[in-house]
Length: 209
Image 1 (cartoon, rainbow, N blue to C red):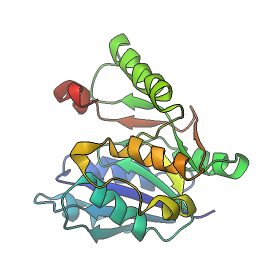
Image 2 (image 1 turned 180 degrees about the vertical axis):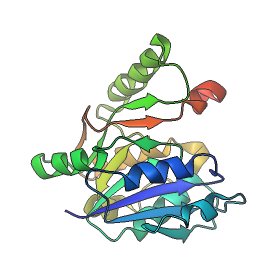
Image 3 (image 1 turned 90 degrees about the horizontal axis):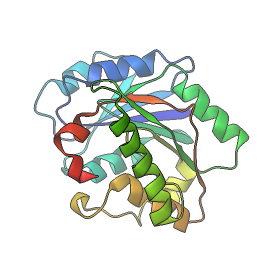
């Protein structure tokens, strides 16, 4: 099973290097790493080009969803793994993702987040549980989490023309999950598929959740 790793980037010069280092240091490496340049005006692309394993694609339409779609469409291989530019994936992230796709009947999966730049306080853990468990109550199925998601190229092709395109209208990761399930796909959550993500959104924009 070959893997395409996709990272969406808009002015992430402070974080993209650590993200790419964590992907290059995997115990089982991705077969390609795609960085989607969503009109960066800082040194994000310059930094990404220093990594020989990285292929940069450009998405001129501004927005997370357009950039995500460009990255997924550009993926050459059967399994797409995605993290955010401010995420550092744990060493066995890809290894464990491949294991679950090989052993389980699953079309997409996600896993837990730890925050590397804010204290792991009880309230943050409670918020994370509310988000994940509350989503199951609302949607009646698992959803995906942008900094830590994987899906097959096959299921992406089924939902590609159905997903919503306006960032302000939806949480793009939840919307993607809804369309996967509507297409008959199965989503699971595995605790060993772990990433270290930035908690800046919790600090600066908690209402967005």
